[in-house]
Image (spheres, rainbow, N blue to C red):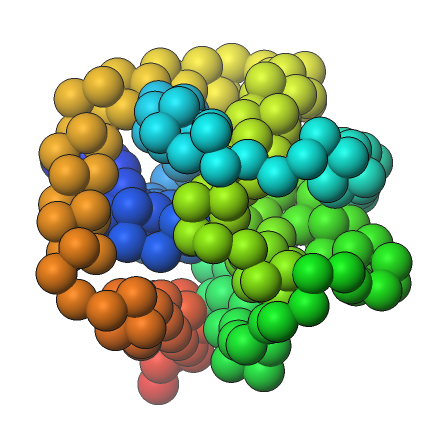
Length: 251
């Protein structure tokens, strides 16, 4: 049964990632948590499962990449704040799986609210405050719940870039974080992440390519706005179930 669940999580995450360019972890991590997988294991699985998709996506969009200077501060900030997120994850992991599910659900709802508030962007230059806020929070959430894409995506939308330029940026910053994230988690959680990492890599070459093709198929046949609405509603439902299910089960 576990193999079926992780395959479904990887497949669902890859479909969403292909449709809107981010949020694979926002789907895969809650699915695994529902099944009872621990927080660190779910995060590393989702991270490793997205690796091949990120590489192929970067190759596809690389020619549209922004200037190198656009990458430096975002990547540094994500590196700097990931350890703080990891400290939060250690506390949540020790508090139990219910707390982890609720924290992930609440975080997803915050992301959705921010996406709705800042959904339109037409500025090529942003105040440094927004850059620091977006990428420090992205690094924190990568470390705490393995979902750092939404703050980055909001920032790229505010830049007014094309979807190809946004893709090149998001895939690059994501790939820059993956080896560091896996190494840090490996030091802290040891053998706990070996099997999830291996399963994630396996799914990235077996299941994820199928989900990627389906995501692109859907994206090419409905407007980008339609894709975002569908995904936003789906993630909102996932977030609400994650946040409220433990409370409902007690009644």
